[in-house]
Length: 559
Ligand SMILES: Cc1cc2nc3c(=O)[nH]c(=O)nc-3n(C[C@H](O)[C@H](O)[C@H](O)COP(=O)(O)OP(=O)(O)OC[C@H]3O[C@@H](n4cnc5c(N)ncnc54)[C@H](O)[C@@H]3O)c2cc1C
Image (cartoon, rainbow, N blue to C red; front, side, top):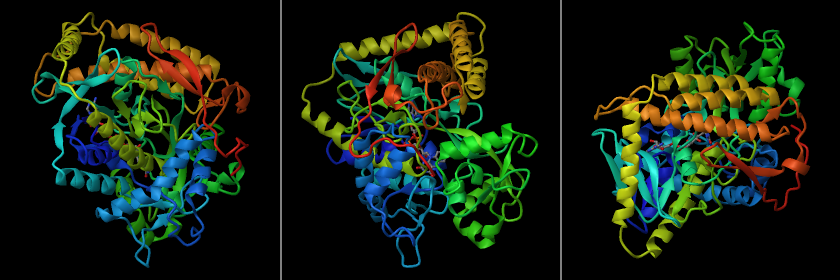
């Protein structure tokens, strides 16, 4: 079987699957360069190790997750994730993951937004790097086959199931089929579709559109998380751990303004609330240079900053020319995370037999309308493990060989697609279309949305899609043809832009990260449901599915 993606979800899946069947990981970059590496603050599990956190339980973690999601998470999925969390963390501990420790030698835990207890396990502010390094070592130990620097462009499917993928070997320029009995997509998120983003430029969501074009619905794509503290002006992430360690948010009048918006939780309210509060301070003229507020860490002292937040200090020194030990950090919200993704169930199965999804590209859904910090790395390790197990068992249950005719026909189809790009049909520059769609999403489909803006955005994105059909000829170079890869990515970003906007326009309520100025209330009667977008050549078709409620009746959120 194959796994597309060498990030945390993909490698965790590979470890599980390789115990049962021959497994290969396909990745466009070396696994250790996957975006997981950038994750800073930590990973949640109700271990009860921290002072003030002894009474924590998986149930309380589930409730915080569901409440944080503004009751759009599937409650059975949240319960499964939080129940499996402690076991998954101990697995990493036994594999040698370099978690920070309490004085008694237990895994240290810090407070994070929207959590009733300090339950975020961390390795200083480099948690993603340490987790990724750990799973990578385990994958090397198991001799898991790797196709590195292969860019997957589409799935091979017959009428009933997924049979593998077509990929571009980036080093040689050759398109190759990679057949498999089961395929897991673990291709990461799409928040780089916004121009102010904490994500790296490979987070274009192309894996989501690969599934979408093959007929898989994308779920809840209107819910884009804006992280409160992107470094001004470039958006590089300053971890929530900085507030978890006690950092304050302060406006140009010197006020700790979170008092106005979340008097109890203050800086540790869920991300949607803190981001909106910061943006309001900016919009209402209480920001520095009308553009940013301060994250002040100075009172934490040098020692705490150097030991708990060394990476943040380095980012500030390198990218803002300031030392947070002496100076406050200028920040503003930045697009950060895709709560939605490829529709899949608790077993990570998509509606297509043999196709599974895990990690940020998937939507099980545990994050609903707003993800809690520290729950995404957890989503990757829990559902990576589940996906690996289920997909491997499915692959192991199949007999029979490859359908060469089918594989050949998909390969030829993809070769024609590349040839069409390379022949060109006009003079449009793909990267110009990419920059435009990123700007439109930021300006019109951002934190505060309105029907008028969304309709305008949809119109403009459709124009860009039309212009995409008149591209200049794309490079025919063979080796590291980034021009060709960018073109695939731009196509995906335009498609996702349309999906995000159409979903946001149809959701006439405010919930979690999705705020409609023209529909400011949450409307459980009409919108306590998941949005599903389906591919049609004319644009996305929308329908809805029920949210699974187990024990927690939706209530108003107060922090
Ligand atoms: C700056 C930052 C900090 C964060 N900090 C935290 C945190 O502290 N706690 C937390 O819980 N969450 C955090 N998150 C979120 C979390 O890090 C991500 O959601 C998570 O790491 C995603 O992991 P993944 O395995 O799904 O994808 P990724 O790690 O992004 O991996 C995707 C993989 O897919 C491959 N790929 C993609 N497309 C293709 C293709 N077409 N063909 C072949 N390969 C492909 C890539 O090469 C890569 O290997 C943070 C996010 C950011 C941006």
